[in-house]
Figure 1: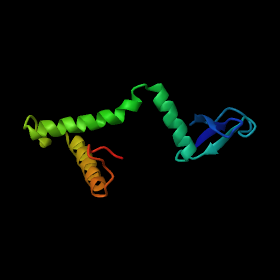
Figure 2: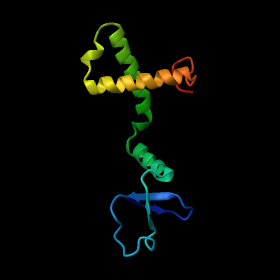
Figure 3: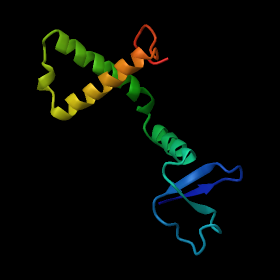
Figure 4: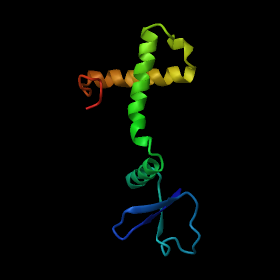
Length: 114
């Protein structure tokens, strides 16, 4: 269970995992919410991105690293089995998802999602 506070426009402006110290949550402007509510997720993503200036480039870098790993394997610099089992599983999962999306036509000519 989490607690959120909204501004006058009803937008989430604060999130807390801990109960807020006041006798009446509503009197303090706080309400109970689920962590999977879209407004809560959006607020938490906004905070995470502003707290870490590298966040916006992280997804692009993941794709670069995947391509680099594939290149190293293709050139026999490393073997897929040289990677830790957890890394192998993640790469296989992403490859499977990428192939499924490609079959559905969700990629452009560069391999990026449209």
